Amino acid sequence: MHAKWAKGSNFRKKPMAFQFQSVRQKFTATILLMALISCVSGALSYYLFRQNNALHQTQLMVNQLEKNLQQATQQQTLFQLRGRKKETFYIQQETSELLAMDKSLSAIDATLSTLEKDEMISDQQLQFKINRLWLLVGQYASLTTQLSKAYLERGYKSYGLEGQMREAAHALEKSKFKTDQIFLLTLRRHEKDYMLRGEKKYIESLHKTAETFLQQVDQNGDAARKSYQNAIKQYVRFFDQIVKVDTQIGQDTESGIRKEIEVVKARIHPIVAEIETKITERNQQLKTNSQMALALFIIINLLAGCFCIFFISKKVTASISRLNKAVGKVMIEDISTKEIERQFDDQSRDEIGSLNRSFKKLMLQIKQRETENKAQTEALEAAAQEDQNRQWIVASVNELHRLFKETDGINTLCKNILKYIIDTAQLNQGALFVKQTDEDASNMELRACYAYNREKFISEKYELGEGLVGTVWQEEEAMYMTDIPTDYVKITSGLGHATPKHLYITPLLHNGTVEGVLELASLTEISPTAMAFIQQATGLIASIINSVRIQEDTHRLLRESQSQAEELKAQEEELRQNMEELEATQEEIRRLADKKSEEIKQCRQTASLKSLIIEEKKSSTSEQELQAH
Image 1 (tube, helix red, strand yellow):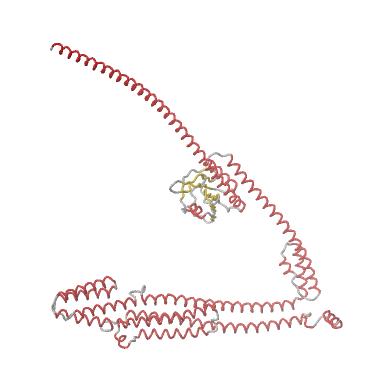
Image 2 (image 1 turned 45 degrees about the vertical axis):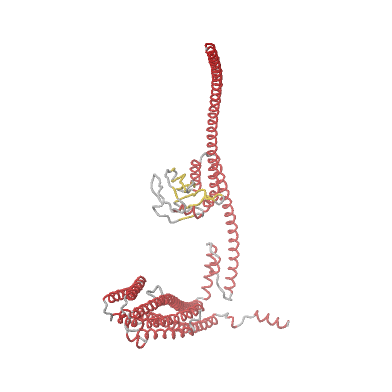
C-alpha cells in the first residue's frame, strides 16, 4: 500500500502527455473538440427535425379534426333546416346530410384514435382532453341519432304523426255542415299558428275549440254529425303527440334535444381549440429550441476556431500583454470581482498562467476586503439613517400630540393638523374629512383643505362607497395612486396650475371604527419616511378627533343639561307661585264660605223668630176671635 501511494505521488508530480502542456497538443485537442461539437450538432439537429416533423403531422391531424367537427355540425344544422323535410328521409330513414355527418363523425373517431396513440402527445393533460373530447363526440353522435329518430316519429306533411293528423283533418273536411267547416278551419288555423310560432297559447286555443266542437256535436242529435267525434278526438290526439315530440326536440336551442346538442357543441369546440393551442405552442417551442441549439453550436464552433487561431498565433505575447493590462486596470480602476475573474482568466500550465493565477488570488483578496469594509460602512450608514428617520417620526408625532393639546375646537384642530402634516411630510395638497353621523345616515364631510401653503374653503361630502374617499372609508384600507387624472384635483395655487402626480388616501381608524379620511397629494413621490410618519399619525389623528368629538358632545350635553335645569328651576318657581296663589285663593274662598255660612245661620235664626212671631200673632188672633164669639 505504501509503495503504491508513493508511486502515485510520483505519478502526479510528473507532467503527463495528455495534459496538453504544449501548444501543438492544445491545437490538436481543439480541432478534435470542434469536430465532436459538429457531430453532436448534426445529430441533435436531425433529431429536432424529426421531432418537429412529427409534431407538425400531429398538428395537421388536429386541424383536420377541427375541420371534421365543423362539417359535422354544419351537416347537423342543414338536416334540421331542410334534410328532415325531404321525402327520402321518411322512406329510407337516411338523408345526404345524415350520411355526411356520420362520415365526419367516423373520421373524427379515427383521428382521435390515432391521436391517443401518438407519441408526441405524452402530456397527461392532452391525453385527458382527448379522452374527454372522445366522450363528448360520442354523446354528440348519440344526441343527433335521438334527434333524427324524434323527427322521424314527428313526421312531415304526409308522413309520421303530422301525416296521421292531416288524415284526421281530411276526414273532418267531409262534413257537409257549415258549422263543422268553421270549427275545422279554426282548428287548422290554431294548428298552423303553433307550427309557425310554437307558442303554448295556440295549443290551449286548439283544445278549447275542439271541446266546443265536441259539445256542439253532442248537443245536436244528428247521427251524421256525431260520427265525427272520433275523428275530432283522433285529430287532437295526434296534435298532442306532435306537441310532445316537439317539446322533446325543443322549439329552439334553449330546450329539448337541440339544447343538449348545443351544450355538447359548446363543450367540444373549446377543448379542440385548447388541444390545437397546446400543440401549436409545443411546435413553436420546439422550433425555437432547434434554432437556439443550432445557433449555440454555430457560436461554439466559431469561438473554438477563433480561440485556436488566437492561441497559436499569439500564445506568449498575448498572455503577457493581457496580464499587464489586467494589472494596470485593477490598479487604476475600481472593478468588480467578476471583472477580476475575467481579466485574470488564464488556465494555462506554464509560468505565465501561474503568475496570472497568483495575481488573481491577490486581487480577489484585496477586493474582498474592500467589499467587506464597504458593506460594513453602508450598514452603519443605513442604521444611522434609519435611526434618524425613526427619531424624526417620533418627534413629529409628539409635536402633533402637542398641537392637539393647544387647539380648541374640531374645525381649528383639523386645519392645524392638516397644515402640520402637509408641511412636515413636504407635500402640496391635502384634505381632511370627518365622519358626521345623524339618525338617518352618515357621511364624510370636508373639515379642512390646504393647498400650496394656502388654506382653501370648499364644501364636499361623500357617502359610504362614493368616490375614492367613500371607497377608502368602506374598505378601511389606504390607497396610493401614481396615475391621477388631470381633472381629479381641483385645488390649485394662485400662482399657477400644476396637477399632482401622487395621491395617498388613508382612513383614520380608532378602535376599528373609521373616524375620518385623510387625502394627500404631491407633485413628487412620497418618501417611505413620510409614508411611515403618516401611517403612525393616522391612529393618533383618529384618537384626537374622537376625543375632541367626545369633549364637544360632553360640553353640548352639559349645556343642554344646564339649560334644562334652569328651565326646570323656572318652572318650579312658577309652580311655587301658582301654589301660593292657589292657597291664597283657597283661603279667601274658605273665608267667604264661613261668612256665607254665618249669614245663612243668621237668616235661619231670623226666619225662626219671624215664624214664632207669626205663630204668636196667629194664636193671639185666635184667642181674640174665640173671645169675641
